[in-house]
Length: 262
Image: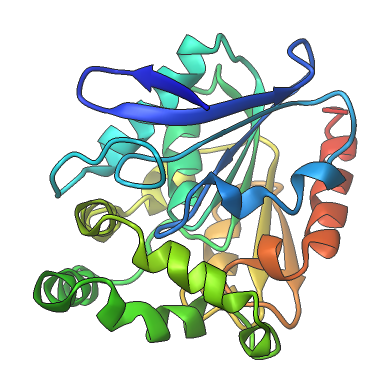
């Protein structure tokens, strides 16, 4: 466990693998901590420097009062990578993590040589939709949303497994202020114009049963980035790295090889 004190927030992060290796950075989704990536870490090519962190309001990072801005979340990632002296990483972001990837690539292209946007988009949902969720949490806590979130997160087959209970628990243990804060950040984010200006190597990964960022929404964002690649994983929802880590890593590792990052 490592804690970086940035003054306004303390970030829990891990820096593993070869300290001199090519860096790969993982940003997790709303309602999860950096354990989201546990299944794929052993499947990555050897020799990489692997960095993960809990965004503000999640996991073991500190939890400022809501709301948060997407700019603050992007700045957190930027300051973490500057602290770790990371340049030219491959940045893998899922859901809100994919929004952070897009925003950071626009702001600091020196930090990112390629991005993987997983189960995310340039714009997710509407302000009214996110406000409804925030209001529901204020009234009854995250528990009131948990069943609906599980249906969006996971495909039908995975929802029948015992493992799903652990992910439901991770969601409901997320601090309400953290979940509401990041929900507010998503609600005010529209990256269509800025993402369309990007030209770095980009991979977009979607799940065909994703109820949060459906494949058509992801294709719309992928089409904004010149030369991007789009991959669909079947039989999974919003968290394909959990449901089918082998297939997810097969796609990711092929991309890393293609761009010469391994």
